[in-house]
Length: 369
Image (tube, rainbow, N blue to C red):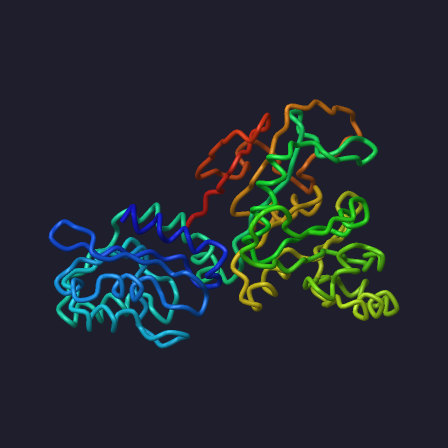
């Protein structure tokens, strides 16, 4: 099963909105075939492993990271393939939360006389499949917050200068993250201050992410890079009724190739101005079959997802720099917790070194995936 999980990871950024799945066939203590889901629309892990095994699959045990599908989609049911190949036993890490499967695949295998076991390395498989499980169970994409900061927790100087806090190694890792997600989201203040391209550069690109801007009053300048390149890289600007009413701004952006949509807003006040609702944006991205979204900032946008309980993971690049200053912004604005008991619960924290920087990967605890 560990080998099957390693194989499944090879589909990262290539199979979404399908899940990453790996399969290993073992007979008489030896691996006779293995495979993984390589690309969306292509054969699933089980048929790939069965093809590699050929006739040796008869009587073998299949180790699969996710319950085999039992319905016709872009490919035939994997359960039918396992039964036809004469597999004797199937060991599954986790059940499929997709209502089209959800235990039906396991029942079909058992009815065919195949021994079925569930739960081996289930926690590891659930962590790998968290975006797919979130998409299926909570009807929204998996949300990754990302920012770069100094060691004293600042994301820019008091003048707004942030190039570059972190090292080239960290920036390359951030581009690799961009290269495998479905959407990259920022607020309009980031567009106006930094004019980012929001594309993956200098790394192999597994998918072209939709660029999403939270812009409640439709202040995205027509001269921004994301607008000027909207004809070649998809760009979605999410506004509210206040922004939608600015017809000339909207038409300028649409003529340049941007898609502009009107969504509901959060309730603003003097301390926390109105924003496009994070939940409304995630519902829209789910409707578009997007499995994961990278939220890059700024601080109000990052804080709004955390305040709403809609952050699943955070990727934090920390540079050995000291910025200081009362006016230098931090990465998380918004309401924040009232006391320590309200801090978001963390399920896992991993740290790795990138040159002189540290990268913290934080997974938030959820009551149930």
